[in-house]
Image (cartoon, rainbow, N blue to C red; front, side):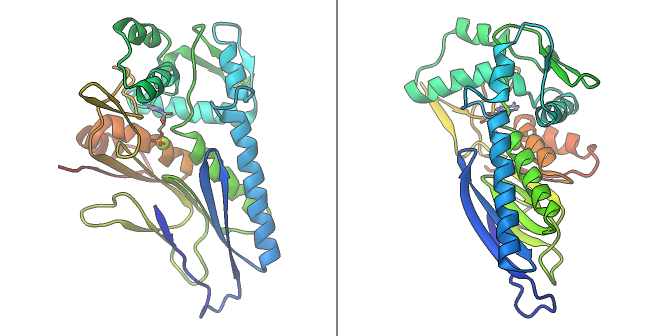
Length: 305
Ligand code: AMP
Ligand code: MG
């Protein structure tokens, strides 16, 4: 994705544009904002980065001490009280699971581990390994109690993977952190995800380049929403004659990579992020059909020939 930076030059609004790049969550996170002065804009961007870093500490599956990993270590045990952030993301993830007929499923962690090994070694896991992993997968094995803000993972060994939704949530929260400092005209971008705030001064929205936005269209003009693209193009594990996507079909434990891209626009970035991943699993025809029924969400899904 690329952002065409609108400039404030020529506008009646004397706002200053600030632009920052930092690595968080293992990817470059780009922030563009318009603020009364550079110092205010810079401080707002730093507040956004601090918030994103905090959330990575909660939701990362690469950091053994993250709250998510500590929760998974207690799988099979009694309910565990979790932070509001983790609870909110789990709630949204399960909501998308239910609406997507299970295409989106954060319990795919054991399959993701097999996929990562397959990518490293080029060897297909055994049937027994797929079966054992499958015992630990299924979004109905995650039990949330919203009154107590607790989570129970029903089966020992379960591994949650928030890779399909955490980035959208973190970008959205970064945007809120900027808003809290009075900077409302901001845009955060990381990998395939965007959280857009109010439009740049004098504009209808932020002009962003996406993977696909309809026949022959790659540009969208957006404000106050999330935009996410997912696809099979970037990360593929090769095993024998098969090429397998990092986006997994929870029913089978793996998915053959296809030239499929999905771009989703939603009121909030965690929603666009989660649904973009789900849309890839659902495919062009079922994904387009199902997403028509989800309020506020616009889906562009395309299989290249
Ligand atoms: P994204 O780049 O947002 O499409 O997310 C892809 C990541 O989501 C993968 O690298 C996995 O960590 C995770 N993932 C893979 N398959 C699924 C799935 N079916 N549902 C939810 N998350 C998934
Ligand atoms: Mg996603």
